[in-house]
Length: 267
Image 1 (cartoon, rainbow, N blue to C red):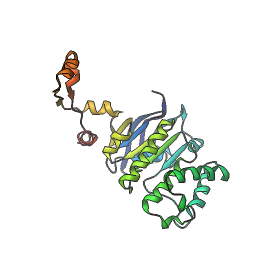
Image 2 (cartoon, rainbow, N blue to C red):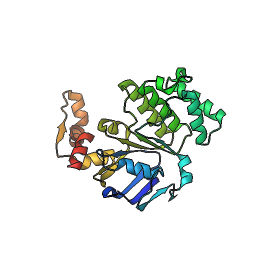
Image 3 (cartoon, rainbow, N blue to C red):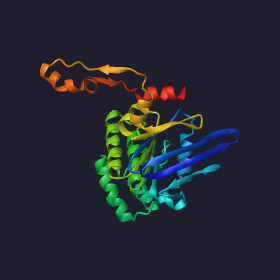
Image 4 (cartoon, rainbow, N blue to C red):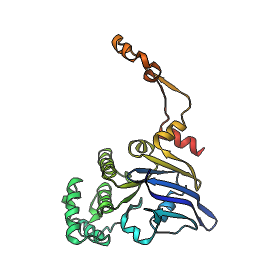
């Protein structure tokens, strides 16, 4: 697997609290990497280190084959769980301003914003103040601003929080589309069902330490408990067709859900 981002034995302490204890992860290029863990596990601290918001006490972060540096921030998009837009500013005005901070010209920013706003059905809100939008609409705006400069690495912290099921599905499709277009995504969440729908690989942090990591399917097989599913074939002709491979055709291991994996791993 081609690795875009790697952390090696990253440690971080705040006074007497250990936030990260030798955490090492590998994020594959062009994949969606789920960063999981209970509240207080250390996920946000790791994300802040990757974004140069804080520095590790020890360990290293490698991005695109070199030690992570400030210049790399132009190639990273970050949508924090606590949204940070200006409530009194008009939506379009601040979106153009923030895009320019990421290196886009005002003209390019407006062209890309129009495309994204029309795609997510928020163009009618261009000249409205952010505080006039619903929470879901505000998060759509935040999402667009995060991806607008087309960075190689995108980091979403609880991106579906506050969305109704319909808009959550819209955003999930956009995240998958970005992955398929070659972007690498770190997706931090507590929502285990969405992990199975979205993620290629995961890492689970608990009490500041890495508990498990791997592809979603590999991790689920690791935590399988020996149960099997037996499928009955009632059509005679179909039965003859599968007779040569009965063990593979009708007996399959029952894989645990990500909720089950999460609970077993942190116990």
